[in-house]
Image (cartoon, rainbow, N blue to C red; front, side, top):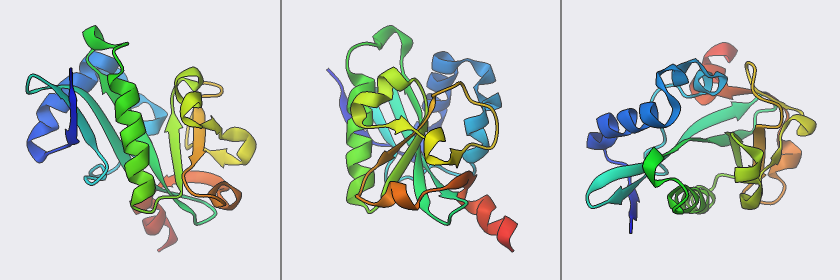
Length: 169
C-alpha cells in the first residue's frame, strides 16, 4: 500500500535519486528539461510514500504557449523501478490532474508514452499546432484539456513561463 502526499522541500534529494534510478543520469538532456526551469509547482507536485519512503513522484511546471495561453507541464512522473505496475504512477497522474484542474489550470501538456497517457484523456499535440523547443519521439508530445475551450486557444511553441516573459522584455 502507498499514500499520496504533497511534495515537501526535504523530499528533494530522495526524488532526484528516484528520478536517476527511473530515467538514468542522462535524463537532464531530454528536450522536456528545457521547459523545467526553476522550481516545480509546489501546490501540485506529489510524492507516493510506502512505509515512509518516497516510491513515486510527480511534478508539474508552469509553461506558456506562443499564443499566450498558460498551461502546466506534467512530469517527470517516476516510480521506483521494482514497484512499477502496482498503480502508483496512475494514482499520481489522476490526483495531479484533478488538483491542476481544481486550482484553475485549463490545459496540461506531457511528453511521454501515448499508450500510458491516452487513458487519462491526452491527445497528440502536434496536430493541434503545439511545438516543443527540441526533438521528441513521434506522438509523445501530448495535451489534455482540463477545462472546456482551452485546446482551441493553444497554439505555437511551448516556453517555460519565466523564459517567455524574459524573451518578450
